[in-house]
Length: 131
Image 1 (cartoon, one colour):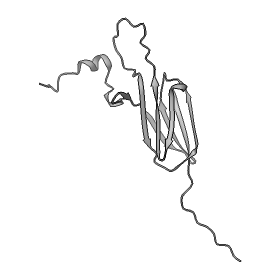
Image 2 (tube, helix red, strand yellow):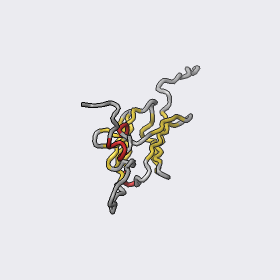
Image 3 (cartoon, one colour):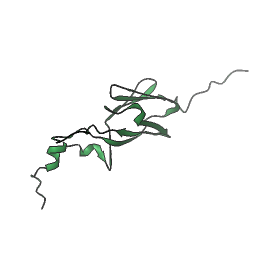
Image 4 (tube, one colour):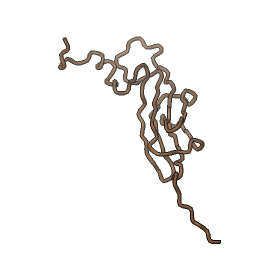
């Protein structure tokens, strides 16, 4: 019988991060915003090395995946574990059209910043010249 008042015994030890887990992978937190010329995605990846991150753009989907190594070697007794390790995967549908040839990614201080240049308007007015 499940008693909704009963606390999850593992939540006390491991913390409550079920909203960040997706199958066998964890999902890093992201911020997505626009500037006048770019779409910017910031991803919280503290403890992840640059060589352990992969960024791809496929159509209107940005995918950020990789792995964070566990820091638990030599631990004799674990009291609490809230920092997720192992593989991660985050896929975002881009809210505006971007130029996939003008994408940059920079990892500093535990934050990955992906900058995607916005594509110009698909429609434009062409002025008719005189003869």
